[in-house]
Length: 235
Image (cartoon, rainbow, N blue to C red):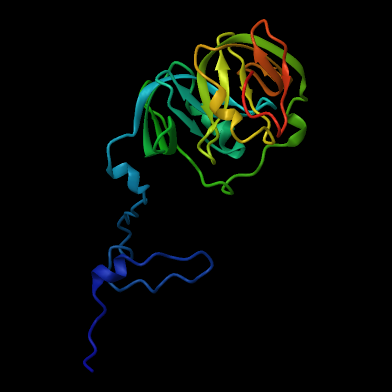
């Protein structure tokens, strides 16, 4: 077999693995002469395609414990991040900002799975990290939940980012409520926009808004129904 010099373009494409020694620098190469070496930063494949969402941020999505876990756009688009990424998200994106979102749309729902969120308003961008890329925030900084009540009209149905089904709503008073995980599997379908409801449960009120997990719900002016696995629809 004939052996020749290893092609330069293949050498340039090698990636260094942390902990391994770097390959020897070839005599006369740009590296040896001190010339700058350009390293290509890999971007998510979705950056090669048009944005899947373009709109104004209405508010942060919240957990019942008051943690920021995503964005709600004015057109109803919803995107989630892990609690580990919440601090970076709030530093780079605020309500009122216009954003372009590269990622994927979830068929049949307003959910968007974001890879990169570009803040058109000020030019910053937020690359969504993988779930374990960042540390969890200290638990002692999270507020305790309290008993809460909210009355209002359902303005936006909120979706579970993993299951892709309705698991709560945004009310006209600004409260976000989520259904308990053990509610009847068909109950989600009974929530409708423009429905006037009263909700009781446990949650928090922070500078970002109010959110709770419902323990009971009813149409406005009607008795509340305790939510459990046997409840399949809103009476």
